[in-house]
View (cartoon, rainbow, N blue to C red):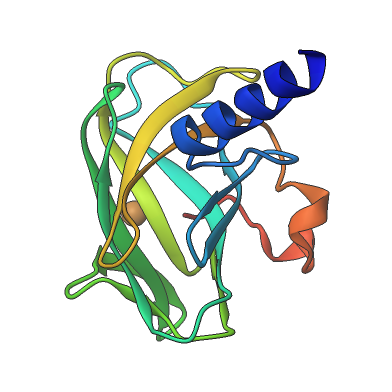
Length: 165
Ligand SMILES: [Cu+2]
């Protein structure tokens, strides 16, 4: 009886939980979404940036198409580029492609999500819900943790961060 119950519970968990949460990471099929995070914003800030890491463990290209959040008017995909010593950002058209076996980082100075028109200022410790949209994986719900600095496990030099987005 005990064995039956635990087997049933496991089967239920597998069918109702397509997203396996790990150390603030998400898995959707062949896609791994690592550590979505955002920064605290001052009152009245028109935007807030969102960062994360995307890893494609499959054999087909995946594309991040966009997202939405109940905490902002829109959640846009942007890319920052340095041109002539000036940091500019523009909307990403066509999405961000993650090739098979590749990891793409949305990070300060590069690709990022932009919460446009946040409903309230983001504060350290907040978990901002969002739904990300992928070509293959479809819609994936995540939470952006609001913190002062980039997550350490995300790797890479946090020294790149100069307050830009
Ligand atoms: Cu932006």
